[in-house]
Length: 307
Image 1 (cartoon, rainbow, N blue to C red):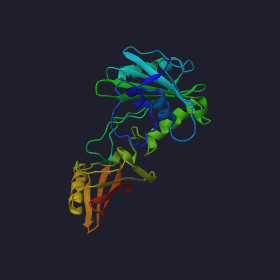
Image 2: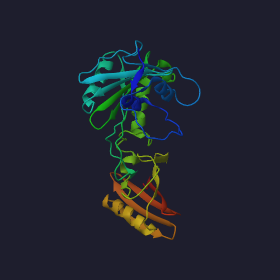
Image 3: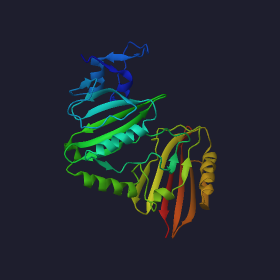
Image 4: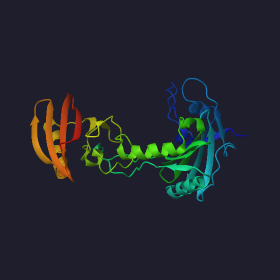
């Protein structure tokens, strides 16, 4: 009788967290948690959702070959998707590749996946957290499958999520693959490797001070109004003067072969402009720093084409 579900596995599929309770003791479950608790967490907040938790793979889950070097932890069948969780004692990359190959043998199309290793430009953390980028596969009649790695200290969970064909949004798999390929090359919001001519690749990499604290995303925030202009924007707090913040970023920009054109600074705002010749074009880079009080700053770096 299926009555428990691994607490470690649950961490990879939970979409909602527990609300605060008056019984605060921080006593963690060591092995298994009550099935009703697991179902409640997996159901989300509000409304109703049919949740079934299995110790094996649901019969209606798309067929795939179980890779060597993994153990099956369990699976979850929710209203709109099914998830299978595997465990690897290594980093899971070989097993992930084997899963992709197995699904491709069953006519699943691999959508061009985003690269977690692509060089980030714009404002970035001094010590960024590694991103787990899901692999996406598409089948015209069966829908989508996402494969994501969840590394732990001494093992890796492999989460395989299947969604039905209705989630294709009226497109076939070839259309989705084409859209993904175009987005990776030209969209500033894509997390993968940009087109070599994209201004994203021309933007300098501006590493925040290690002492800085920020609520911004761990990945750069790119905003673009056209193909001729792109911005990276962040907000952070640090016990530095405006002059110290300006000098910190200015040094990084110059080190990346940008030539200083002008700089100005007041009590609350600092501005700088740099130019750079790249291939057959001239780029203009501008830095805007605004002191918002109480050691809080907003920083915007913009790249545009001069000619």
